Image 1 (cartoon, helix red, strand yellow):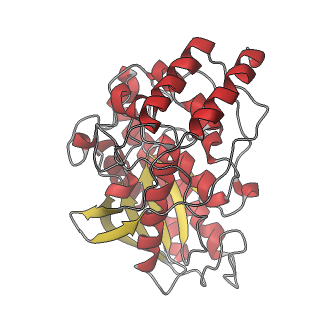
Image 2 (image 1 turned 30 degrees about the vertical axis):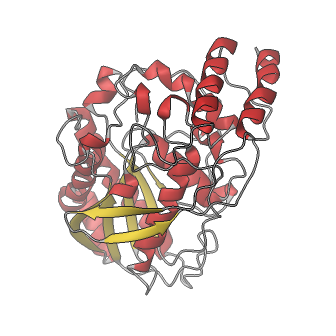
Image 3 (image 1 turned 30 degrees about the horizontal axis):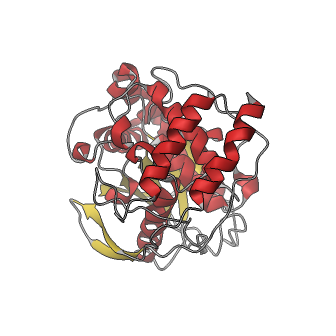
Length: 348
């Protein structure tokens, strides 16, 4: 199997080198309900190539199919996804994320009905709808995440000088906590359940009072935190992730099956983080980003400066899991080799 993938890898690399139009377009990212807008220039120059000896379990036929799909996309004159015109087609990764002023925590939504059904749920029409919300277990996971979140914030408050060595140029920690979320129901419901846990879970409430935290009640919905778009694979079985994730490792700009590339997700995350950070110029605030598995895994790898962000699938988030967003590779958990998706577990 490894030899087969090593055979196909040069083809994948060649495809990524095919002449393509350079994108320098402007896209609008919106904050819903409590809404504001920002213009973002998608200018990408940080180029790199996957360097790994870890090969996923994928048949040569599947790899060839994905490569063929990506070749079709790469030679298209269209600068935006043919199934979702708000998503750009990029030829390279964005610039590295600059230092941020605030602390960020990444919260994956709890178990959703789509997780249980074992299907991919990424259509942009889900934004603002109640479809594919949390299951009872997912609601419980959202509530329990409050304790983990407060523990992480408490760790940051112990940084007496607020130098944020692992996070960038962060100001002295404050006591304010803000929630941002994807507009998909499963993410928003998780943010609300986490807030509920911070208000109603006895031991968590006690710790919040001891720390003197000022937790804001609003959950601000941000389009930039939406699920990664899976194009023609949307609504399909989880097993079809195997058409995308292994190719991500070799070519983070690929758009096989009209999926949103790792480069495109990284670019919108960069814009979203910089926009949110500019809202709190005093620095040192604690900002929770509630989103989806692929988006958060890409975010943590991109923010940490991992050389190949396409390896994000080896740093899985569980349902309802919350992590501190670190700014160096040492902050990442131990990578776990890519495994086939399982029903109710890895759906984004």
